[in-house]
Amino acid sequence: MRFCLCLPMLAVVSAFAADLHPSETLRGKLVLGDGKPPAVETAEHKLVTLDGDEPTHKVLADRRLNGFEVEARGCFTAPDRFLIDPIHTRGLLVRQDGKLRMVTYWCDTCSIRSFTPGPCVCCQRETTLDLRDPDKL
Ligand SMILES: [Zn+2]
Image (cartoon, protein in one colour):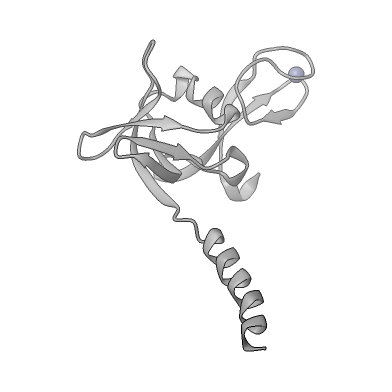
C-alpha cells in the first residue's frame, strides 16, 4: 500500500522538476555579421552563438539590431552556445534607454504588429522595427 501511494507522489515531483528546467539569462551585445551565426558578446568579451526557434532566428537576422544590448533567456547547450527560449515566452529582450524592450514590427498602413521582420502580412509593405515595452503590448 505504501508503494502505491508513493508513485503518484513521484509523478508530481518529476513534473515539478521539468517545470524548473534551469533558465539562464545571457546579457551582452548583439553581434550580427555577414555569413556568421548570430552571437552575443558578453561583458567578458566572450562570443556566444545564439540558437532559437524559427521566429527568433528571423529576428536575429535583422541587421538593424546589430550592436544592441540584449537580455536572452534560455539555456547553454555548450559553453559557447545559447538556446533562446521560444519567442512567445519573450526569450529575447533588447535594452533601449536603460529599459528592456520587446522586438516587434509595425505596419503603419494596417496597424498590424508582428514579431518577425519582413513584409506586412496584409499589404506586403516592409514593416518598421518597433521596440516596445513588454508591459504595454
Ligand atoms: Zn500592412
